[in-house]
Image (cartoon, one colour):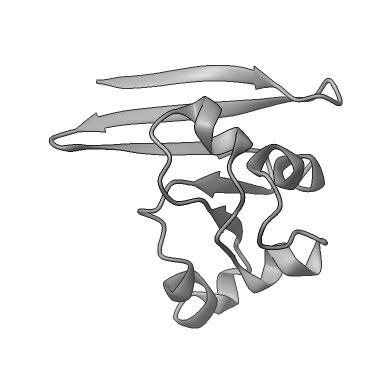
Length: 101
């Protein structure tokens, strides 16, 4: 099953949250037009190394099971392009998304 929901940030902007229920796990992501945050399934190393030419803006939070947890959790890793926007590890997903607008 898949769920797509609008999420309103503190600054009033709306982003899109997606939950994909898979056997034994759930993929969770929240995106803007520029980038996204995702659960621990995101391979930030791959984005930074093998896909660097794509300049993907993304962050990963681990141990999250819901969109709400992803928004509140500190980012464990980020891409170089996310860092260039001022996003840092330890920043909440919600704050990172505001910088991706």
